[in-house]
Image (cartoon, rainbow, N blue to C red):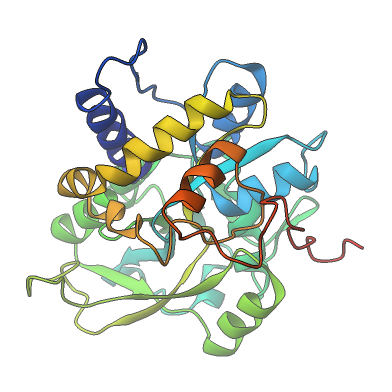
Length: 311
């Protein structure tokens, strides 16, 4: 809670149910601990669809970085960038990523898998977040509770990520005088070159309707997509079911976007964007029908790029 998964997932569930016609099923949303939990629940057959961060999905698919096997997950639709940033209170004195050394920093809920992208993000900035070495004190907490911890001084900074605007960042910036900790530009470029799930992202100072994106953010903020939000399923889920769900989501994407702006990313340019795992055949079938499946991905399986260091 406090991130974008819950409102986006709820919006998809609501719109699918409203437009399912005479389909003999209903969608129901479940609160979970995040991407890593969702992937395991998909594998167990508890869920048929799940929200996930593309970086976490990537490592799960490859069976790397703590995953005990290769998970047979498949993409359904690529959603909004998961724009990650670190915030602190103005009076903290923290002004750079290097200043996080020795500090207490929230890094997302336990079990969600945030270390798969927060780890390289911090370590490349010289603040080690490795299994055998940590230059700061990581605090596992969800976004909403992180705002409270930042307010009462229990932590010095918070990592938060999600679609823009991220509810918890909005909450923090309207409650306190917040400082947005900038990334080192050279490090930012290096991360994007090194990891397939990092991409350029810019947090605009103003929204489309001219309002402040976040109070205290006076200029556009160069950030990063630390693993796009995407909707995933398991390879064994029925092709016809995934086809119909993909069609419902696509045809009613404007209604989903009315409930959360992240759904604006369900468009011709972004929906089929490769984030490192194959798409489900049911989704591919629909995207082929409407003519947006890329010509250079005839099978849909492709060859997702290897993780850094993997041959």
